[in-house]
Image 1 (cartoon, protein in one colour):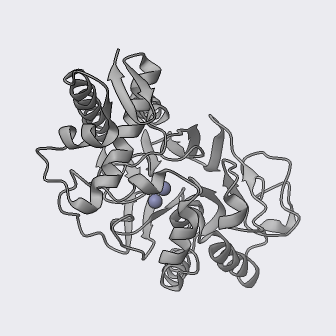
Image 2 (cartoon, helix red, strand yellow):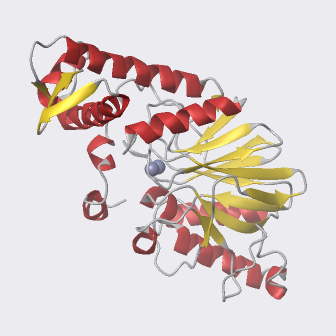
Image 3 (cartoon, protein in one colour):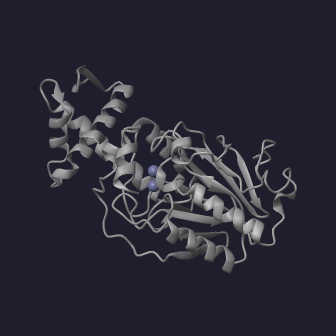
Length: 335
Ligand SMILES: [Zn+2]
Ligand SMILES: [Zn+2]
């Protein structure tokens, strides 16, 4: 995404104070542009590698041949991605029945318009007559409300920024626990998992007991959050599923243990914040607390603000837990 767009968006979310940290990220695995990951899952890389997006946004074609859905659409107007997607869909003779967007961030929702145009063209120029009956293939979720136009339906948890990131997309709204029957032998269950963003979803692929974790859990890198309390609740919810495999929004495929590793990393950090707070004789500011917590980690100066953002969000959770109190603006004590 261009810097201009990113700066424009940055006012919308505290996330962008916390997005650049990758404090325990080791080297990133090289990922092929297109990879068949299981009989039901193919990953198509979004062609947008970067410090925030790692190897690029992972988009997934999910379903049993020939009927699939596309999870996420990458960045806006990324021709190299839409070319790759077109070639992948054509070469495998797939029918993309719908698009599911995991959250409003532009590296997931931004490409929606372009991708939808591509898939619409493939429907009409190809051999598909799926839209001849709006009550049929369009309504893959059993939703009686379908788009006016004869085009590929898009599904997403609603969010105020949707219309700015992807104007005019006339999306169907998902809800928690909704079942998506993609094709025979392929069912996705929608899980509303706020924390990374408040509209974030994960998708549980029931036949595999695998999980599309979007940006709630990444592969080979730490996650990001805009609300720490919600984030931890969502991670605990994912852990209860005990998935055997996790397909993240960025990075390599992980085993199900990644959710536990995420939780323990966060709990360790939270414990460090509380210990630092308890180690001070009087109230202490977020800046000082951050220095204490990260003192042994050789924190890059460019990451200090992000680290302060993380500590601040953790303090909010400690306040909700009743173990910390803000005595004046930005200054805290343990209770
Ligand atoms: Zn995101
Ligand atoms: Zn992302």
